[in-house]
Image (cartoon, rainbow, N blue to C red):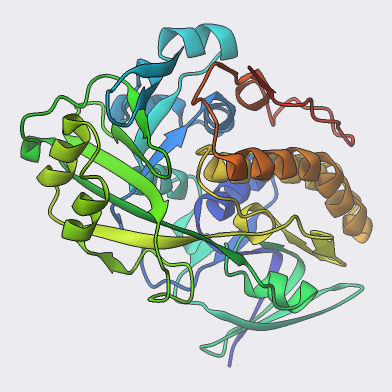
Length: 389
């Protein structure tokens, strides 16, 4: 058994964990990141980085790198499931840069993750370390990992995702509610597309009880992504996990009545993965002593606003700013400030995502896209109501 001392220990090397490590490093605070996976994999998933997320990535120095590889949709295009009639189209591309100061980009999740990993020295990312226990007192936190490693840290940031062990230890086991819906997703080469033009927008096709979102995820437009949501019995899965393979034929049958463009996209892919969609209420608190939760560990949300990763990125900057200005002997106050600033906003996005009406009709997204985690005042902030009409 070995023991390592660390100023800051971050649990989880996902998007949020790497972003907060990079943000702290910018501020002269070194953090070690502990990740249970042995290696990072480029699994088949697209991700939308709206202007609020891109402001974070710009401040971390990644904007140009991502612009060089990612797809910049012309618009958020919303269409009726059968006729293809446009219910709403919100301009992106040049409009997003003019109104919000940053682009709106769509990319492969693995490419975003790999870019964030370049900001943290490899020796600070400890792979194959599964957290099994932790204990804290007034001076620090002791972490125990499955392989025998023990870490003594001044404080801990838990970015360990929707199945957070840290959250469970702090607040007890949770009981997420299955929504009765399942998501299917995949990426595949655009060369496989047959008799369909995906177009230059991020397109969501809205059906009476299901939908599908389709877009390119590379600047070269050589890779396509789609993700769905539809009613389905999830007796086949217990934990939320994208490791489960989906049946392509069942998926195609579920969208048999949709517009031919949707059917042709589904006919062009070879395999899919699926995920049971659960929902949760906001947590009573995000920290205890010298341990704080962030990202999906404290505010997991349904995917219908494409803001889950964006909220984790915003968290990373606000948390780093709170820590930077804190007295280390009173880190608890920094964590409480972080929660007071972020909880109203993330709770509102959780509620908006649950409603699953985002952008279907005319929408004013300023309250989401206009947020800047680098400059928002470090004080409890009231979040304006979402404006839709």
